[in-house]
Length: 302
Image (cartoon, rainbow, N blue to C red; front, side):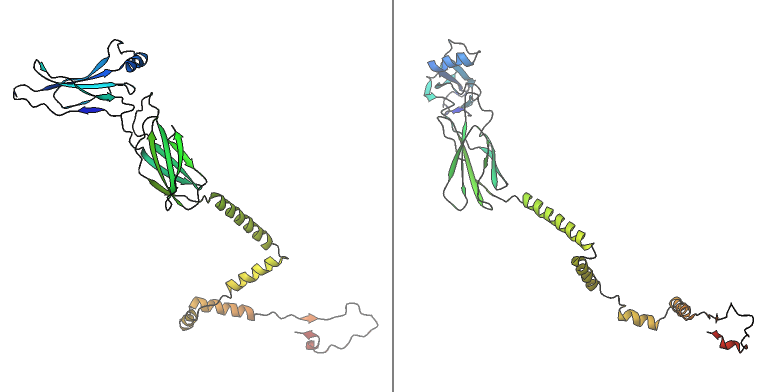
């Protein structure tokens, strides 16, 4: 939708004055009537527009000077002082038809849950209100020549679903109107991936339940699981043993504090108390004679 008319320069012998150029656009009857309806500033009896007047360049950019639905003829002439050439008339031109629509911009793919989200921008901006642009999307497996197409109408986003997981897919998009087919974009490829969110949640939930069950059963002494876990723990822990090199070092270099503590511990174990048990009859008969008192050692046991 960029419109520029160019021409070859006019060669003249008199170089004291530059050659000037003028460009005019003459509308046909249909364009004049549509202009009256859509452009309030357009005068109904004016059937042409001056696009460039008295310029020295050999081109005229008239993109912003006519409407996309106008149809008419381009005319160019050269001027040198008071002299003017004849108008050179170009074939009929209508911006919305006699144009090339380029490829879409910023085409991108995002893989999610085995689907591909397609997003892109229009080929140019702003798009005239009277110009309706549609889009066509083609996609295929990277190693396959079979293509599928989707008409997106005016939407610039689309989600490709029901695709094979962990597979590379390629996408191309082109814009078009009812009378013009645009240029195809470069292909963009992306690999579909599997959504592991649900799987991770299920695995975590199962792990939490399993841990809870194991802990619950392991704290009950009567359960076989408690005995098995206790046996495994004893087997893994093993007896506490002092490494041989540490024993050799302690034997060769006994510590006074350790020797004192060991000696005290041995003495404490060897201490004993003497207990004497004396037997006597507290209820004796008055007429009964007392037994002779022998040595005290006979009634004393140690």
